[in-house]
Image 1 (cartoon, rainbow, N blue to C red):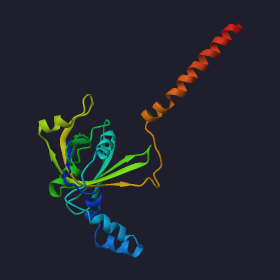
Image 2 (cartoon, helix red, strand yellow):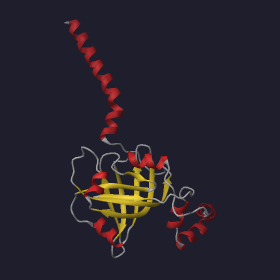
Image 3 (cartoon, rainbow, N blue to C red):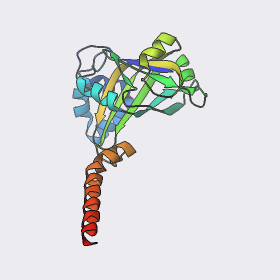
Image 4 (cartoon, rainbow, N blue to C red):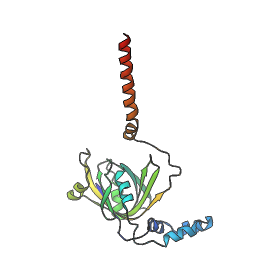
Length: 215
């Protein structure tokens, strides 16, 4: 399965359209009571058709090996699903459009069915080691066309793709690192400890050499 996300390419300030789209009357009223409304109002004033993805967002997206995607059920319930794969399985297609191949799972097809009724999605991307997170909102569509799927597949990844998802990104927002606990994958831990393990191997070899001289 491939999911493609497309973001319109109009020149607007980062996060302005995201905030303008997500803030409702209730949120704005609470911001006014808390004293933060004036600063968010200034940001919203620059909203356009979309927040334009820059190299910073594209590089962050292409480095991820997982993300969470929220959609809306036909009864209006929010639904969140995890998507994972090799780094780069979610990537920019062109402009503000991103996408990924969706591989076979438990065959519940909740996200695919939700998009048939409501194409709005929200993506949450985490970088735990560096305590960074990126939120994206957009309009998504799925395709079961073999060409669309093949265009988004990751070479040598052993999994069976079912469809492609394409997402037109409407807005994005970076969050502060507050309250993010650093976490590391096995590969990240291996890279970080390799110099120590190499040094330990050398020390052990030297000890064995000295022990042999004693004998």
